[in-house]
Length: 210
Image (cartoon, rainbow, N blue to C red):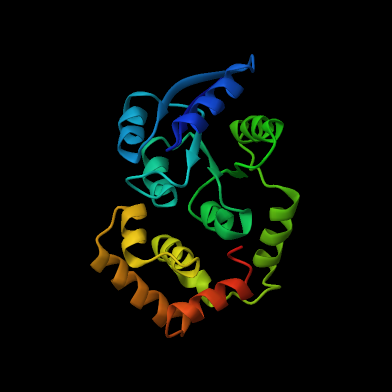
C-alpha cells in the first residue's frame, strides 16, 4: 500500500486529488494540508511514502520547503504538482530534492503513474522534461542568467515579468512591499537589467511567460 499525504492550497483541487487517489486499490491517503505550517505539523506525526506538494502554498513556497521536508521525512518521495509548465520550475524542483514533477494540466492517469513510479524509488519526468534535463546535464546549453536566481527571486521575477505590481506580489507571496522591492533590485542586478519592461522582454525571450 502506498501511503500518501497531499498538500495543495486550493480546496477544490485538494478534493479532486483525494478522490482520484482513493479510487486506486494500492493507494491510501493519510492526510491533507493547505499550508506549509499545517503540512509540517502533519508530517511530524504522519510518515508517508509519497508527498504530493503544490508549489503555491500560501505561507511558504513549496520549493523552499523541499529541503525541510526531506529532513523531516527523508524516506518520502516528493512529487511536485504545479500549475506552472515544466520549463519554469521543474529543474529547480529536482535540484532541491523532488522525485517527480507533474503539471496540473496533466491527465489523471499521468499523476497516478507518477505516484507509483516515485514510490518505487525512481524519478518521474515527462519526455519533454527528460530532454531538457539531458541538455542541462551534458552542458549542451549555456546556463542563462536567471538560472542563478534563488527560488524566491525567480518567483518574484516571473510575477514582475507578467506585469504584477509590487503590492500585488506582496499580497500573493505574503511579503512586505519593501521586501519585494529588495528582491526586485537583486533580480535586476543579477540579470543585468534596468526596469520591469526589460524583465518582461527577457522572460519572453526565454519563453518563461505566456
